[in-house]
Each structure stands twice: as structure tokens, then as C-alpha cells.
Amino acid sequence: MKLLVLGGTGWLGRAAAVEAASRGHDVACLARGSSGGAPDGARLVVADRDRTAALDAVRSEAWDAVLDVATQPGQVRRAVAALEPAAARYLFVSTSNVYADQGAPGQDEHAPLLPALEADVAGMEQYGEAKVACEQAVLGAFGADRTLIARAGLIGGPGDRSGRSGYWPWRLAHPSDPRGVLVPDALGAAVAVIDVRDLATWLVDSAERGTAGVFNTSGEPLPLGEHLAVAARVAGYTGPLVPAPEAWLREHGVDIWMGPRSLPLWIDDPAWRGMNSRDTSRARAAGLTARPLEQTYADVLAWEDARPQPGPHGAGLTDAEERSLLDQYVHGPGSIRVAP
Image (tube, one colour):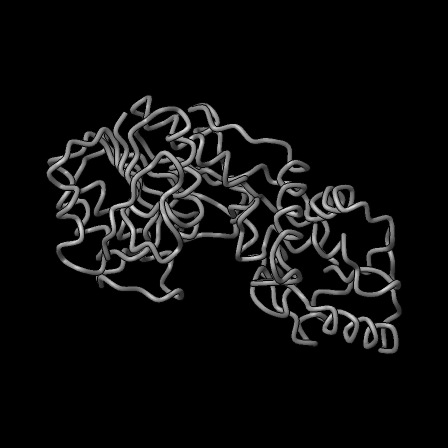
């Protein structure tokens, strides 16, 4: 198979390029190269997709499949216009953020979408609308029979620079305070993480098979408490957890989900909790499989510990932030609560 990865030097695109090259496929990665070179076994085509002529170097070749992970509608619109005559099929990695309703659990691929963004360039506050526009551009150019759209949920595993999947294994391996590790008192809330390598493998499998359609590609929804238990086993942590009320955390400036001064994977808004419990049965029937969560967390912990500057990055609390919050919680109106 001849595969063109638009990107391929970052994270998911790179994982897919590695997987495809390991199978002996002819793989090209079109990217600026700012994230590094192409993986072994693949060739790098240097191009800036914000430029009109970015696809000129590859549009004259015949491709069995194109894999695209872009967020900017303009990049995708230019790509499908240039590559439709040259490519047999187009695989686009979208997001579960395209759905209009993020509250109801168990929704499948037929759930209503957000309105598509008309502009070519989007900010993060327009992430869902931008991805809807990208999906429409691909389907409009290639048609349903030549298109695969993977609406991914939270992607985790080694290489996760957002810190979302790495924070809890790292924090439990490196507790900042003997009193315990601060966690949100929302341990029953659903969280779903799909390993980047599992998604990449399925994308390459789908390219080989010529799979078409729209698929929710999230991990298995599990309670946050189970994620913490798995992370604790991987980290060898046997100390207490300190569940702080969600309202208290918010009042003390702790953010949800991701970013600095946050407790990752936690969502306190019921209108968003369905995002982590979408129906993925269609993707499973099409061959999507998942390794044990314990393996994902063990591998992301090893990656975190091997980084040149260990510690929270992208998401989570610093040691000083966590100790300060524990001080306030212990001496505040509530009393400290620990769980094994």
C-alpha cells in the first residue's frame, strides 16, 4: 500500500506512519518538519499546509490512502481538492467534540453535529465546529464510499504532551506530600482513554481493508476511580487519596480536564460528561481493539520519567500547588478525607 500521511512527524500521525512502515508499506509524511523528521522507513516531504502549493509535491503520485489529522478547515479543503484525483481513499481523524450534545451518554454516530465553521482558520474555542467543516470537506470531495472519519475521544499513552493521560500515573509515582494525593470527589464519573498506538493500528488496518464510514473511536468508559486505581498499581502507590469536593476545587482555582493547575480527566459539568461515554460498537465491529489500561498507563509513566524535565507538563498540579491546596483543605472548613 502507498500511504500519504499529512503530518506524520508529531504524535498520532507519527504512530500511524510507524505502524504502516513496519508492515512494509510505502509511507510518505508531508509536514513542515518542525516536530522532527519522518520515522524510520518513511520519507519526509517538507511542506507548509498553510501555503496554496503545499500539495504540489505529492499530487502527481498515486496514493492508495491519505491519512489526515488536521484541525484547520482551510488545510483540509486544499488537501482534498488537490488529492482527490490522486488518492483512492481518505481517512480523516476527527473528534467527539463535533457533537452538539455532550451530556447524554451512549450516543452513536447519528447524533446531531455542531454547525460547520465557514472560515478556513479556527481557534481552539471553535475546535468542534472546525472539525465538522473538515469532515464535510472530505465527504464532499471523496464521497462516503471513499472516506473514513474517526471521531476520536481522549487519546493517551506514551508521547502525550498534553499531560492528560500521564499526570495521574506520574503523580502517584511521585507524591508531593505524605498526607496523600489530591483527587476530585467525582470518582464515579466516566472517563475513556484510547491508546494512541491502538488508534494508529486501527487506522492502518482500515486503510488496508478500504474501510469506509463514520466511527466513534473512544476508549472504554470506566469510572475515574478505576483509572486512579490502575494508575496507582502501575505507580506502586499505596498511600491515601484525598477526595476534595468539586465545588471546593473550583473555588480554589483548580481547573478541570487539562491545562495548568488542573486535575486531569475530571469534568464537573454534567452537560459534558457524555463525551466520555459514546457508543463505539460500530468501530469495535470494524476491528478497533484496545490494550489493557494498565499497559497504557505503565508505558506513559515510563515515558514521563524518561523526559529531560520530569514533572507535570501540559496538565496537572505542581508539587507546590498540591501542597498548598492540601494545607487549605486540612485547615479549612472541611476536614481531610482519605481513601485507600
